[in-house]
Amino acid sequence: MLSRLNLSTKLILQVVIILVCFSLVLVWIFFQFRARVYDEKMMATKHVVEVAYSLIAQYDESVKKGQVTLAEAQKLAIKDVQILRYAQKEYFWINDLTPRMIMHPFAPDLIGADLSDRKDPTGKRIFMEFVKVGKEQGAGMVEYQWPKAGQTKPVDKISYVTLYKPWGWIIGSGIYVDDVQKELAQISYIILGIIFLVVLGSFLLTYLVTRSITHPINECMDIARRVAAGETEMNIQSDAKDE
Image (cartoon, rainbow, N blue to C red; front, top):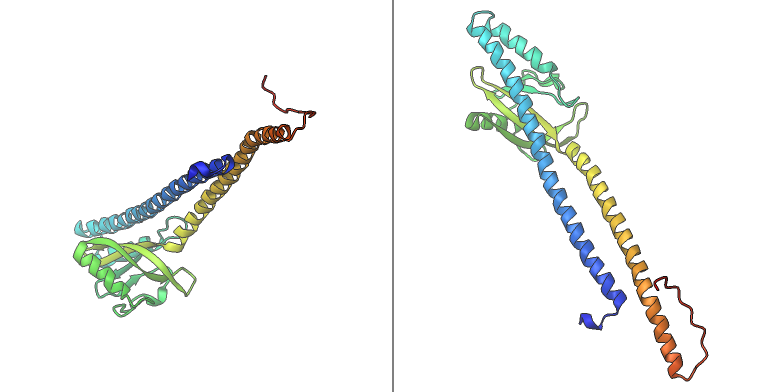
């Protein structure tokens, strides 16, 4: 079947196959990179939550040494964790095993509230899920929906929560999925731009190469037809630079 195709079609077909393979490789790389970005974001979140956990543990140690009372230590711990930030805007919250909100820097109206029946738009009882993960695993990831600071519309969020067992506190923090998607979208635009430029350049190069090969062949065939027709006087021009 391929033998029936002319030279131009064969060259274009080969270029298309190469471009498809190249594009598939880039798409595969993007999805691998996407998974890695999510993993790194969550590992970073886990690390900062562990930092907050360590801070609380230090205050607990002060209680054990008799340096402060439990109430004083908890008050100081809440104050310190409340002002902690990372990645400029990300924050921490603390709830107990009731679950009752102990501290949330952007939702002061929830402080002291019983959150056992608080659900996200999907019906997930968010804080009960935090408690479940803390009790059963000690720490882990939870996917749910929650509004960003200063907003009211819930969006997808993935949080890492850990239980500080001596005080019965759940400490958590998370990332908003759409923030990560925006970062990935910028990368995908770059990849699409690369694919577009490669496709454009490849077809332009294929056109030039095909033209440089087929043009002399077509001229020779034209001359042969004219000779066969009995034409003997012809002005033959050649653009070839090779001697």
